Length: 272
Image (cartoon, rainbow, N blue to C red):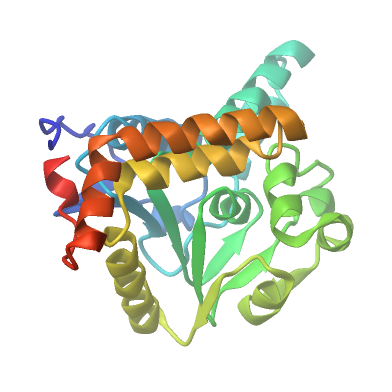
């Protein structure tokens, strides 16, 4: 059964679009190259919470208005917030809030696709790595430039390492080297490398079609499975996986999926 529609937040720095069962969030600070200001992060978190609560939304694409996807953190706000008279504990708290934000991206029950163009730098690249699928146009410049300005890629480090492995992560973090989307794809930061925005949108359409063939609750449970696999020991993981499987196979969604296979028809996920 579809959930009743919940009103989307009204925000300045993030635009929300809904096409049937698929949402798009646009980073909307093109004049600042979509740099991640406090307001943008808070607006994005509000939209993520809204979308996560809606079982009628199957997937989410995050992309940027203007010439680039995201130039990274807002250094003007960075200087005002972090290098002011605020205490060390206050700065730790602010950094931890950013960690909570990236975790919210990773924890979304829906499939999360990032569509990159122009540039995806520092925290912008880290944000994309917290999603499920990354599509990048070949013109996208990338880099983890934090160490070149004397700071640490603190809250995004986990997601970069998961994507490329520890030693490639060491190289791109410790050199702050900028690189192309083609090089990013070779390292594992990009899943689908395409010629331009039009090709990226065509790839996005293919992904939407594939996701829509899958059961929404099964996809959400599979995302939980993948996260817990990094946290649980072997025996605990066996039990957890068994619980997820049992819940799925006994659910209305599981019954519909098996029935549709045996009856040689497409499953009707919307009624479950």
